[in-house]
Length: 432
Ligand SMILES: [Mn+2]
Image: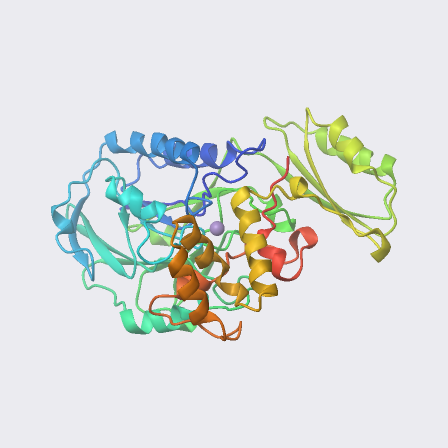
C-alpha cells in the first residue's frame, strides 16, 4: 500500500497574522499530492491548539471533507485493543486517515480533543494506545498508535499497553514524543523503550524532519509542515512523506511543498543599520511567491532601529528581529509584540498568581480549564489537594498527568525568543 505521512500541521498557527493561511495551504498541498495514496497517517499536532477557533475548525473541515469523495478500496479489517470494538463495521469514505493526537491537542481526561471530534464526525480513526488493521486486496497493514502523553510517562504507558506487531501484516508504530537523540527536552524518551519488531516507526512532535533507524527498521522523524519557530533548522523547506509498503527498498520519499513561504535565519554581530538593510535587500533579490520571513538575530552593539525596517519592508517581507544585547539594553516586550492570545495571557497571569499564593503553579492549565467550565467549587478542592505538593512531584498518572503538564514549548529551539524560566511556554512566537 502507498502511505502518506503528514505531521504537525498546526492548523491555526499564527492566526490573526500574515502567516495564518500557511498551515492550511501546506496541508492542502500535502493532501492533493496524497490522492493516489491508500492511507494517510497524521502523527499528531494536526491543530495548533487543543480548542481551535471556529475559524480554524471550519477551514480544517473544509479541507478534510474533500477527501471523503476520493476513490479508495481499502477496508477496515479489525481493531486491536480498547475502544475499537466493532470498528471493522465502519464504512470508510475516501482515503482512510489514521491519526493520533499530539501535545498541542491533549486535553484533560473526559474532555473531547479536536482529533476525537474529527473521529466522531467520521473523518478519521483516532488511535490512543490501540491499533487498526486495514486491508486492500490480499495485503494487510496494521497501524498502532500512542497518542501524545507527557514524556515521563511513555515508558510506563508502553509497558502497560505492550504493543506487539501483528503476524501477516506490515506493521506501523506511530507516536508523538520527545525521542532521545533528536532534540533537547526536560524529559527524553529513550529509543529502547519503543516496542520491537515493527516494520516502520513514525514519530511526530519533532519539527525537524529526518529518517533514522530503530531495531534495524526505518524511524521517520516526520518534522512539521510549517515552521512554528524560527531557528537555523527552520530554513529547511517543509514537506511530507510517502512510502510504499511493497517497495521499502526505495526508501521513504520526502516531498517538499512547492507553494511554501521561505524562511531565512541570520545572525549579525555589531551590525549597523545599513548592513542589516543590505542583508534584507540581498535576500529579497531572490524570487518569492509569498512574502519571505526574514529573521535576524542581532548580537553585540547595534544601532539598528527594527521598527523602521519592519515598516519600510512590510509590503515585501515579514521581518523578525531578536536582539541579544548587553544587560542594560534588555529588550522590553509588550504583550502585543509577544502576540499572546487572551487565553495564553490569562494562563500566564494565573500561573503567576498561583505561585505568589504559594500554590502549585504547575496546575495552572487544569485550574484554567476548570474555571473556563465554571467549576468553581472543584477548583478550590483541586487546589487544596495540590497545595503542599512540591512543584517537581509527579502527579498521579491515572488522571492528572495531562492536566499538570505545562504546555510544551515547541521543541525545536529551547532558546527561542530569549524567553527564560517559567514564562517560556507562553512565548508563542507569533509575529506580525
Ligand atoms: Mn508540533
